[in-house]
Length: 110
Image (cartoon, rainbow, N blue to C red; front, side, top):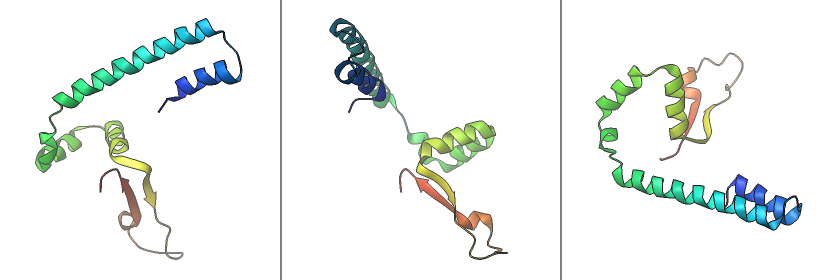
């Protein structure tokens, strides 16, 4: 599935005719090279990934407590889906339900 830069490039060439064929081929080849390089890098990283540390809860807890708030937010973004964290509405005005009980998490894996 093509990314946004590829779609824009194709639109500029095929739909809007903003560039000539030679420039289109030059830019397309550059994008193909970047995509192939990124795919190769991801394959190497996938082969080298050791996720065994993620199974040790104590290690995860220590790592979580050691990072600052910006890093915690970044880690949560990696683990949450599109909806992220939602706060369910109060049942009524003056509802004393603790906020932590009203939070909903859209985890990537369930």
